Image (tube, rainbow, N blue to C red; front, top):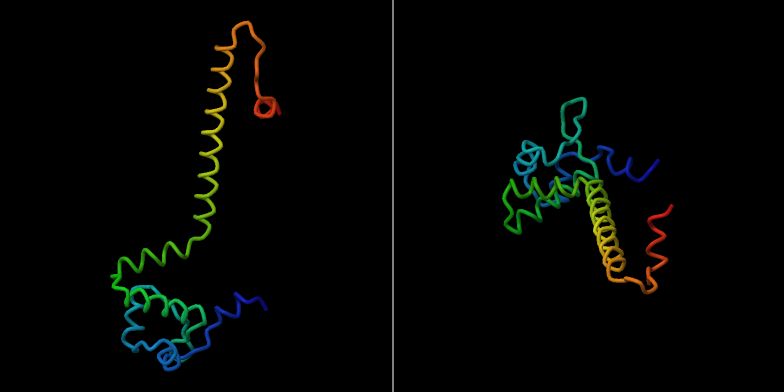
Length: 133
C-alpha cells in the first residue's frame, strides 16, 4: 500500500482530531463548511479524518494564527494544492527564456553579418549550430 493511500485513509474521529490539532469541534466544522477540509463519513454519519485532513487543519490553524483571513487561506491552500501549475509555469519560463535567447542570438548574428563587410566572419559555430538541426 502506498504512503499516499495510507495518508488519505479516514481513521480519526472528531475527538482525536480535536486533541491533535487543539481546535474546537466548532472550528473544525466551520473549516469543513468552507471546504478547507472534507472528512469522510462513517455509516453512522460521523466524521472520519485522515492524516492529510489533520495536516490540512494544522496548516489552516497556523495561517489563522498568522492573521490570514478565510479568503487568503483558501488562496494559499489552492496554490499549494496545484504543484503541476508550478511545473507548467517553470516550463513556460524556460520557453520564454529560450525564445529570448533565440531572438538575442539572431540579433547578434544579423549585426555580425552587417558589420563584417569584406573581412572574414567570426560567426560562433556552437551558437549557429542551433539553427541547423
